[in-house]
Amino acid sequence: MTSSSPPGHPTPLDPEQQQRLRQALEQIEALAVELDGEPAALLALLRQVEQLHRTIQDGPFRNSLPANRNALFDLLQTMESSGGWPYIPRLQLRTFMDLLQREPPDDEQALAA
Image (cartoon, rainbow, N blue to C red; front, top):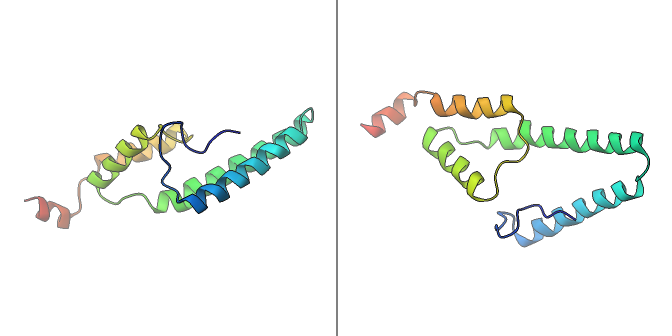
């Protein structure tokens, strides 16, 4: 089974969360093995996994992105140093780039002065 974090990189999940994730992934992998030789069923499984990915990406992940440029940059550095990016379509990467290019809100400009 594939680990949820790259080898040699710690996961930000606590041990109980890591165990729950590991169990869920093992169940999905077991289902994929069970469906071996059934391309239509495997395609349905892949579509549902992709839908879950999009739901997490467009909901909780996007909602938890930092609002300021420095914090977003720190997050991107952490993502890179901890094993790279999850699958994020190019359009979503453009969103990250746009966030980095935004002018800071007036209150942040005042703090920087």
